[in-house]
Amino acid sequence: MPPPLVRPFGPDALLVEVADAVAALDLAGFVRDAGLDAVEVVPAAETVLLDGVADREAVAAVLARWRPGERDHDGTVVEVPTTYDGADLDDVAERWGTDRDGVVERHAALTFVSAFCGFAPGFAYLAGLPDELAVPRLATPRTRVPAGSVALAGTWCGVYPTSSPGGWRLLGHTRATLWDQARPTPALLPPGTRVRFVPA
Amino acid sequence: MTAADGAWEVLAAPGLVTLQDAGRVGLAHLGVPRAGPLDAPAAALARRLVGGRDDDAVLEVTLAGVTLRAGRARWVAVTGAPCAVQVDGRAVAHGAAVRVPRGAVLTLGPVDAGVRSYLAVGGGWDVAPVLGSRSTDTLAWVGPPRVGPGTLLPVGRDDAAPVALDVVGRARRGPLRVVPGPRVDRFAPGTWERLCATAYVVGDAADRVGLRLLGEPLERVDERELASEGTVLGAVQVPPDGRPVVLLADHPVTGGYPVVAVVRRDDLAVCAQLRPGDAVRFTVS
Image (cartoon, rainbow over all chains, first blue to last red; front, side):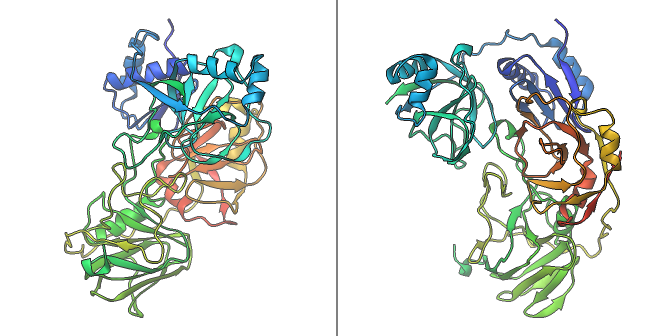
């Protein structure tokens, strides 16, 4: 397998391109376990950013040892109790060719994995929705989406940690606290966490 | 906590005033910006002048000044954007250690030039750290709350002897030095040269998140949506309108706009002091 493409990102960062978010998560975990000297390791949709890298040659050596898919992803499972009462539930049901109960059944049957965080502290991009269930973002984002909203965009699922503007389609809401800066582990769903939604 | 415990009380803060230390590192993968002072050399100088440590928190004071009553006698130093500094109405030095007696009122006036002044106190501003840092991030408001009238700021115990002499470095002038970013290939041929040849002006929406620039738009040739990717301090992002944004300390940790260039770390202090309407140029590092 050819080594992943590495793009220099300014004087002390590297951007590594990978196939998808699951590969990015895999590589980020590998790089951390390898003890690579980087200040930040940031997985994203198709890349891993290594920021604050002192020794670029060490990075090349670590990347050469990486084999995607060899790592164990049986991380902690977090269950998110969810009330399926979102404003876009009927819309999603129509797109999926089912009814409200059918949406709940399909969504709650999936096991997602938190691939990366972004947009806001503790906002996890959850991978695991099959391609055929992908839904487009709203053409016009809502000016306010309440905290705890469980939502879909493309093949991503996410839960809004705080109320904010947003263009994702709303399935329901949870009372779980997604982000609390006073907790030792502030994010409920850090990258690598497996997630199931449980109808409340 | 009351003022009787020795905390300093903020009497007035007409503009944005925040606590900043070395920043919050290692949490970008959770979506947490790094924060930290925008003009890091000025903040470091203020800390050194009062004999402080590298990770002591300072106040970053934006444009309009701040007024505090000293709950305990301390050395202070004001650096960064020049402004009138007074203790009980008497003018004192900017860029030097000054003794403030208990109960005295310290005033930083509006800035005469630049944008951000820094106020360090002997022992540091001893607020409780949040996720390992006393910096306030203004994007998501991670960290201690914004400083405003009535805020009580505890001061640390060590009131070291101030440094008698320090070099007040002159802020670098001239163009911002850049290296090519990871997505230069998303732009029309010659864009890199265009970036370095264009006279930009700082837009109105300049804050701790980014320095938004006005000028001839850069042309993106690859209009496919870029999947969100991690980004770095000093990255020059180009949104669909073609006008570059230099990402500063409170920038989002991921972004979907292609990065055409990265500003050298040493030149970000220049960005910290630019005002809307100021001219900006880029040059190859």
